[in-house]
Length: 171
Image 1 (cartoon, rainbow, N blue to C red):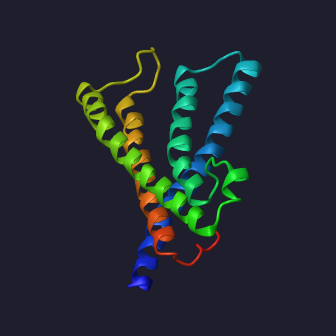
Image 2: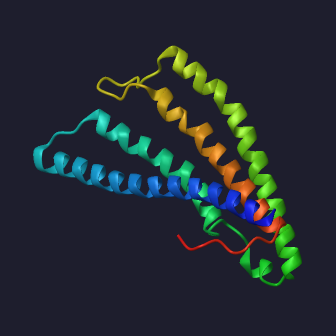
Image 3: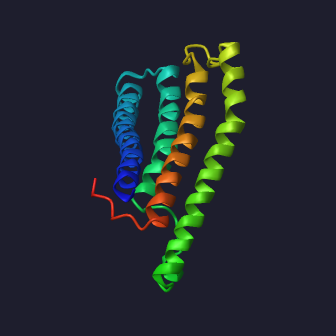
């Protein structure tokens, strides 16, 4: 059972790792877009509304996919000064409770955000600005996707710590 569970957890973590890589590439795209927009403004005295909107649109997948990757890589916010003083058993219990809370938070926010995305899609919502980006519902759809991904990583986190699975392989 443990080898099958280990493979399942590794599969879930591979999904999160893939979205983490996607978030990293979106960071590169964001830097290039901002640099291009700055050069266009200062060299050619021109700019585009869609480019400015795309900049803040790209922050969404970085944050929403990055939070799951942070949990995967152990970079989540934790009070290490206290955590390191606890016994390994207490640390495991804290990790399991934290993972369960991530699952709960992820599922709750998926449930709450889906109607909002559906309403945006039904309206064909786009930017209210002339020259802005259409399909704002696509951006809003990243919210349930990102929090669903957080729930997936929370599940992997709980299983890894509850069953004391071997440490994950470095990315």
